Image (cartoon, rainbow, N blue to C red; front, side, top):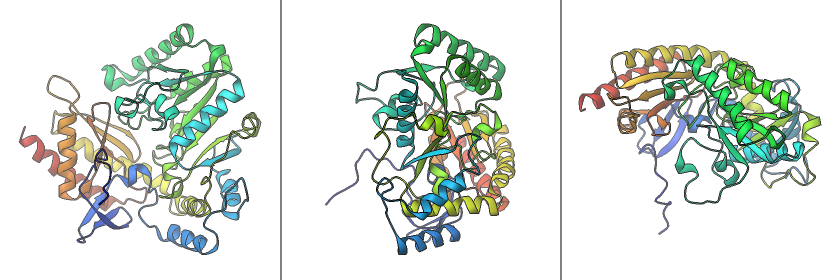
Length: 419
């Protein structure tokens, strides 16, 4: 009898039978509050009626029309509709299936467009698991260990991670920009540097937001040296942070933007966007793929955009995120083990540390598992797994926020009472 790989470790014991909104139901009918959203994917909630209807209608007409062979109406309509939400000037799109593929497409475009070999990434970033994407990922060694050699031409510079350094945010940002200048002086000459690649909020790296000074500093250096700025919005995009794009909080003006996860409410779809002038510098034949821009996924993405606009989900993410953050801070105020509550919108992390200040992945994992037993599904992140993250669907309401906060408080109380 075949089995799943033993290396695939499930974060919760749930066998999901169906989903509705922010809830999952197991095969025995038990209800769980899903504050994982498939790692930020089910942006409009599980099985939103409008998304379901769009997908069902499309399946009855055309499931797959490979988009370098034929085009189809969902693809063409999605390109048009994305034009209303993409950053100004980014008017050309390439579609794939996953965030990793988007990362690889973005760096391929950057290298071909500039004729330069190197990519500067920032410590704690996560960009995927394929070889090139993993080569640019530094949120944890588990994503890149054991299959070296990795892709050459990747240089790592500090991210302004104030909680890690134990510094005020301004000091962390000054340090990160100063070290970036040092990196360009000592490791990757500007004339060899194709792009900076950065997440506006570290995802797997621990839910650490950047700030305006850092992204503006990247933009200024990119303009000065002819370097492209790639912003990875795979987890932060499509309203997750309370703005449509995560970098909208800070500025930064990307040359290339990457998106996936919440783009199609659970259907595999990713994209990069750039100006037509930049995209046209990609070499012939360098963009393609069998399943990218699948017709059903495109139909789901169109419905997702409609739901986000019609139901005011970006605003809801900001408002419900503020409520959730306040509730999480109340829990943290009662426990010295939770040293930080951080993030933006509905992308919030709780960091656990030991009494001597070391990252405490064991307690974070225990709290996450206790919450699952009580009916609240969460995930961990951070280099040591020391951060428990809350990423509910953007349709979450105040009642669900209150219920989740209560379950979290009970879970933390139970775990810390034993320690």
